[in-house]
Image 1 (cartoon, rainbow, N blue to C red):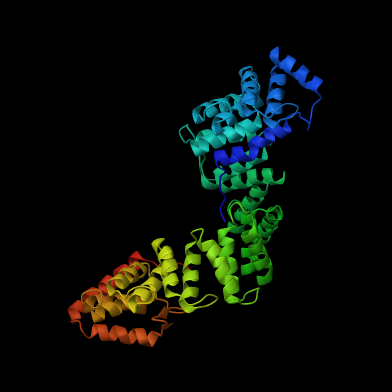
Image 2 (cartoon, rainbow, N blue to C red):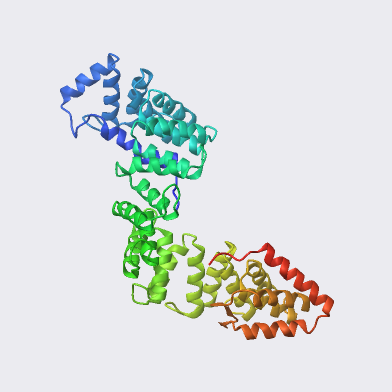
Length: 461
């Protein structure tokens, strides 16, 4: 639910167009007007040179010609016209507009524009320094320029400055200051700042924790189409925080975020969570086929939990045709990202020879990866391999170590070899393993298990 800074070239793509549209222009200009503008520009009038550049850039009254636009922007920029300096910087950033692509030259012109005190250009120079584009990355310098723009009332700069305080980038981390600048930006309707302020209220950072206030700000940003805020609002409804628990409302907001922004193909977290609702039948009819659709969208974006869940649907044949090979593919993708459940699930496929050649050594590898993260099922399964000597050398001390970890862990909801883990079953396996050890061996393994728990404290539920 945290904020993201805008990248320099994404910012330019979003904002450079605003420079042209904010300049004086019309859909068409009488030929006499263009002639007069050209005459004034040729005589050295910087404003006319800039306006003529805009006309060539947009094809207004003259043929569209970006190279010619850049030529006139340069003339105006060299006379100190700040907006022309910015546009010339954009030309160098993009390249192919009468100048070669040259980030250093782009930064030079952005700085010239910013040094004239124009808030928009100060904002952009801050973004340049934050992203380290052909200048050394320097968040302190970025904050300096954002502050100049923010103090002039520039809402994106206020958001950036608030984010810097939020993360402690270029300034000491200070959530109260983050909230202060976010409030400034939200007064101008800045959607990302609204979402950021919602985050602070959600966490109780810099402001009293207040889920209802978080919901208010998320709703404002969500209403402006910000997918992150739509997802966050869905989470509040999903968990009944600050709003009545309402799975239908949660599903509605997740869906908005999941379907939003064709360029990014929707919000991956929202797609995954919407899949969970269909999987569980919360707020929507239980529908494994729909769950599979949404899991797949998120999984293809690299969402590990979605990859694991999609693998499980293929494993069980829920909403898709049962296909262990597909299950293995998706488990592997999630497992390679470090997701313990997926590692354990892939171990089971190798253990049973489902969708992959039966390979106890591979099963042991994947069980161990999950077991070392505290996955109870993997610990129990790995213990069994050591007890039987399958894929590993038979070793009762190792068998006892892993089953002891499993027996000492929270078992609620855990499964082992396809069935719910029962405490009495695990306890019996531990007793069987212990029976093969001498008292001294048993004491050493128990001490090793105790040390393991010290090094792996239980995560809060």
